[in-house]
Image 1: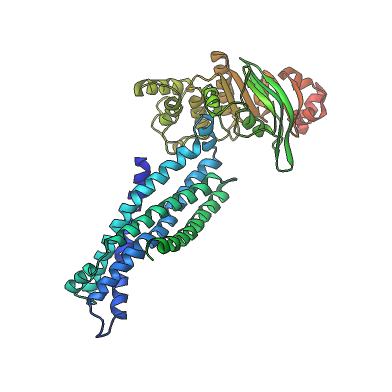
Image 2: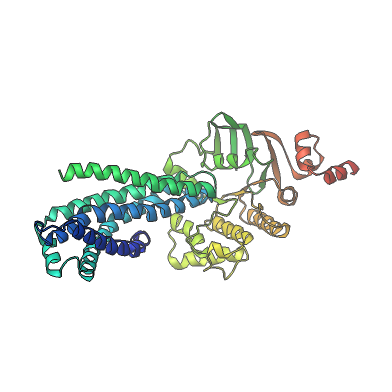
Length: 216
Length: 250
C-alpha cells in the first residue's frame, strides 16, 4: 500500500508541479490579455486564474495527465504480470490476484491524488502570481486580491470530489485493461494505450456529470 | 496421487482436450508429452484450476478439486508447487523475497525462520548468495532454479512443471531434470512434468502419457516409448531422419 502511494503519488509529483506552475502562468497571461479593458478591474486576472485552476485545470487536466502517466504504468505492469504468468503464480498460491494487485492501487490513488491536486492548485496559483508579475501582466496586490475575491470554499470540495472519482476511474480502468491482457509484448502495449484512451474518455464524461450534479 | 478423469475443455469452437484420463502416481515423475499445441499446458492449467474444465474431475488423493469452494481449494493449493515455463518470478521482488512470498501466505513462520527456509531452498538448488539479486539480474537457468526453490519452499505434496527445459541449453536442462528427480525422490511427492523434450523423458520420465490433438493417445514407461509401434508417437519420438535411421538399424 505504501509502495503504491509512493509509486503513484510521489512519483507523479514532479510532472504535476512543472505542469501546474506553467499552466498557472499561461492562464494568468491569457486572462490579462483578454481583460484589457478599462471596465474590467485588474484583480479579475487573479480571480479568473483561481477559478480556472481550482474548478477545472487542477482536478481535470492534471487527472488526464495522470491517466497518461499512471494509467499506462498500471496497465503495462499488470499486463506484463499476466503474460509472464506471474498472475497465474499468484492464483496457484491461493491468492485472489485481482484483489491483491488492484485494490491497493485504487485505494492508494484515491488517497494520494487529492493531496497532489491541492499541491497542483497552490503551484498553479503561485506560477500565475510569479510569472504574472515577471511579465508585468498584473501586480502582486491585484493578483492576491483577485484570488481572495468572492472565494467559495465549496469549489475546492467540488474539485476534490472530482479528483477522488477520477482517481478511481484511472486505476480501475487501467487495471482492468492490464489484468485481461492476452498474448505478448504487443498486446501489453495495446492494453496500455487502451487504458489511457478509455480512462481519459470516462474522466471527461464523469467531469460533465459531476459538474452538472455538484455545481449547477 | 492425482487422478484426472475424463477432462474435456473447449475454447470457443476449438476442442483442446477430449476425455483425458490419467493417474499421476505418487513418488514418480509423471510426464505428459506431445507436440506444441497438443493441449499439454491447457491440461496442466486444468489440473491446478487455472482453467475451468467443461467436464471431468480432478482428484487430489481422492479429494474432488474442481468441486471445492475457494477456501477448500486454497487448502489444496498450499500443497501444490508449480514451476512455470518462464519461471514466473515476481519482477519487483528479489530472489529471496520470491521464495519467502508463499511462506508468508501459507505459514506462520517468523521472519528469521522464513529467511532460513529460503536459504535452505536456495542451497538445495545450488544458488547460494543470490538472495539479493532481482530476476532481471539472473540467467534463464537460474530463474528456473529459483522457481523450483520457490515451488519447494512450502514442502509441496504435488509438484507441477510446465516445460522446465524450454529455452535452456542441454547441460542446464540436465541440471534441472536431475533437480526435479532428486526433489521427487527426496520428498516422495507426485510430480507432473509437461514437456516435448525427449531427452528429459528418457532421463527422468517414469510414467508417461502422450497427448495428441487433445486426446490421450498412449501411456507407458520410458522403455516402452522407444519400442512402441504407435505411429503418431513414433513420429514424435523419432522426428528427425537421423533418429529414424537409428531406430531402423536397431
